[in-house]
Amino acid sequence: MPRKSTLAPLAATPPGAEAARPRGRPRRSAEHEQETRRRISEVASRLFAEEGFEAVSMRRLAQEAGCGTMSLYGYFPSKNAILRSLWEDCFAELFPRIQAASRRGTPRQRLERAATAFVDYWCTQPQHYRLVFLNQDQRSGEERYYVESPAVIERFALFRELIAQLQAAGQGRAGEPQLLSEALICALIGLCHALITIPEFQWQPRAALIAASLGIVLG
Image (cartoon, rainbow, N blue to C red; front, side):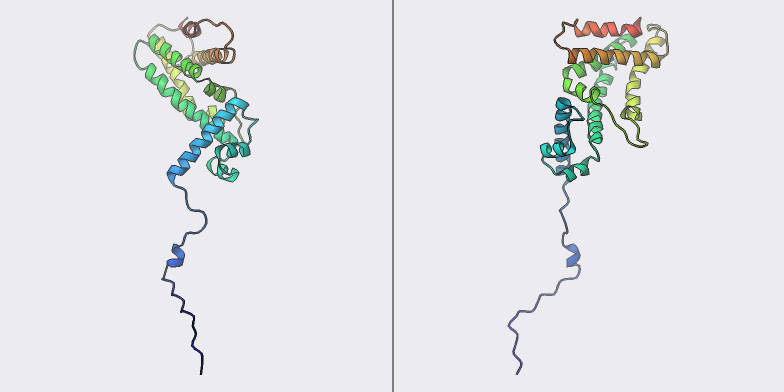
């Protein structure tokens, strides 16, 4: 007589149950990804400003940010991509301030306020200045440099437009607005560089230096 099995019969797998089982690592929430990206950006901003872009590796960034190196590459494809992202954060904060400052007043007042907002931003946040102007951009293949991007060109065109309005009002120095705007921007960046990197020198007041730089355009 055959012996009866004491094993309980296996439960049948419901249709579609196998496909419903999660496989691999669970997908991160949008909030988690945003927080991780923010943390990476904060760490990179600090390290690039303190030690320089070339001195910091992706492995170091990952360790400081508390994530794996491969995970870091999932957020940023390269170290230069992180640097450009940080630059974009700075300019996205800077130019709305310049636009707001230069929205009202005479053409001369608008240009003066734009220049002041530009200098004040970098001088009150010197770590941002070092991050943007003391780290060299790198590109690969057919990639453009960051300053060649349409967004950056359009932002800095604000100074050209303000100079053209000043000339139209008969108040500015004669000359090509683009050339004059580039000369003014160079002067303002140089002013910021001196105040930030050589603070021990007894410079003239910032407002006086800005006014002198505007002489390039005002005559």
